[in-house]
Amino acid sequence: MTKAAPLRLLAEDAEDLKVIAAALQDAVGKIGDISYEPAGRRLTLAFNRYRWEAKGGERVRSALQVGGVMKVQARKLRRNAKDAVVELLDVAFEPGEAPGGAVTFTFAGGGDLRAEVECLDVVLADVSAPWATPRTPKHED
Image (cartoon, rainbow, N blue to C red; front, top):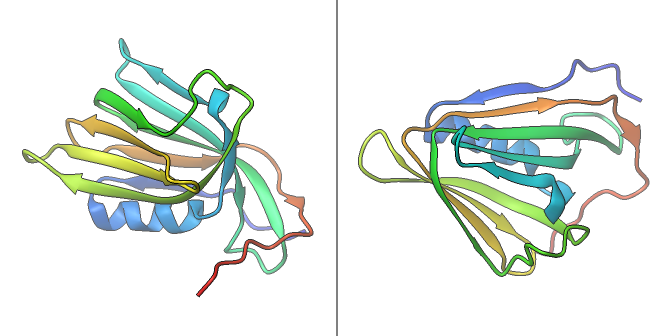
């Protein structure tokens, strides 16, 4: 395994979020690992992230938290199926009334999650040691 430091990223604008999106591409998680706290205005997602930055095939447990969330909408995600596995394809920011907008998580199979935010405040952190995986995600051209 690679002895790289755990990843810790902060996004405060759309360009920063593109870096987080690249790090999270092909991350997998369970519906039950998605949590919205309306009182705290936080959306938290936990994933097993493929470590694209590592030299070999590794995954690591990572947590992503979006702050300043005013509303969350899900489409084509079975929220009651807590053990259903989702694969993250992309994370993007759609500007709205500055500095706010929406953070959209796009999943394989056509599902997405949209969080309306006051401003872009997203943190990604690795929370475990990496482990070897025999499968490298592949994309069709």
